[in-house]
Image (cartoon, rainbow, N blue to C red; front, top):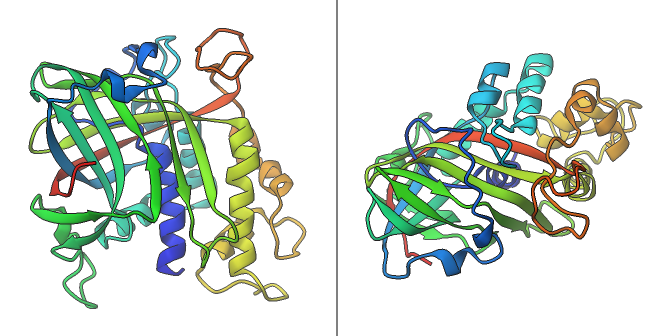
Length: 336
């Protein structure tokens, strides 16, 4: 699997996961959606706050039913943890041995995936008008790996790295909230990211997230907690599944049972979902998979009939939730 294809998969997944920032044991059922900041988080941020910058050191996906709950947040204000897509990750690992966790661990350690977090606050112990921004990084110093023989890597994750912002990966994720006794709680905000990688995908892939938030603690030395967001079923059917089909088309151009580049992402997708052996994967094939079909269904009502953010307003579930744990360490980069 080539580096850029790995980066496409991992950054897409990470952008879905990193709805917020934070550290410490989170009260993941505490509901503080702060809808007043939803459409314009920047207006809720205190501009005089200092910037503290971090790079993500690890991401933890649910590996069991218990972790699905403990790795999620309440995204719709009903005092229950939401993490349906996290449940899919856990189910796929159990049913197919697809180890996405190992893939993400490797990509973070070798620097293929660099997620940056900028926290703006007048104080990291108690403050209102706190801002958070999620960015993609590149060109870390020290370099992630000491050389070709370095199989551990992670040299840029020791708290002293300097990193550039990667302008190729467009991320629009700005959060506002408050810090109380060293605990950060963000508002719910929309977020989006766009992947424009013509060498991998025939067209740019733009994904919109709904109700992204975090509710964790924060310190100058680390962030360590939970982030959550939701994605609409229209977005899953119209963007995520077709993008996976596009990746198959890039990696699998041959004929016969060995039609894909060995070890490629496309090969993994074909092995999981190609039911008729034509070396292509349709949206219908993905949705008909027994594991995916059992889990892919909306669990949140976040939008009203006009598509505005209004949790529980019309009683129609239209989105799926996702949550994960992560840890970040200090890193230097230009704040936006």
